[in-house]
Length: 129
Image (cartoon, rainbow, N blue to C red; front, side, top):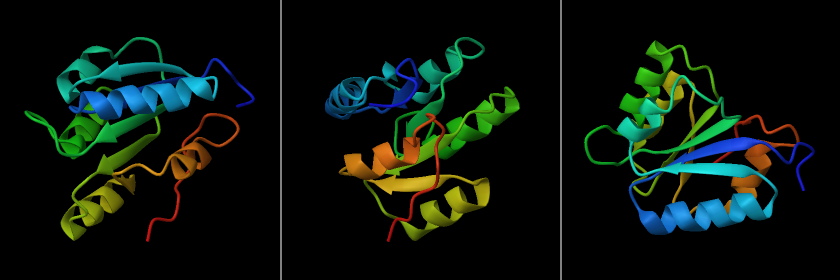
C-alpha cells in the first residue's frame, strides 16, 4: 500500500482493456485513478486536479504520446509522465529520452510500473532493457 493512498494517477490509452486493467491494478494499490481515451481528453483536464503521475500511451489516434507531452509542457503542467508503447521503435525511445521521458513497453509489467511510482507517488525512471 502506498504511503499516500489518495495519490491521483491519470492513465491515457485508446485501448479500453489497458485502461480497465491499469485502473484495477492502481486502485488495488490504493491510488485514485482517472482514465482518458486519448490525448485531447487528457489535455482538457488541465488545469484541474494535479495528478502525481501520468501514464501516457504513445500510439493513439489524433495526437501521439510525445505530442501530448509537448502540449502538457506548453500548458505548464509539470507532472511526471511515463510513456508506454507496444511498438518498441528505437526512434520513439530516442525522442522520449531527449524529452526526459521513461518508456515502458506493453504488455505492461505492473511490478515495474508500481516501482516507478515509488512510495511518494512520484514517477521514477526504471531501467528497461
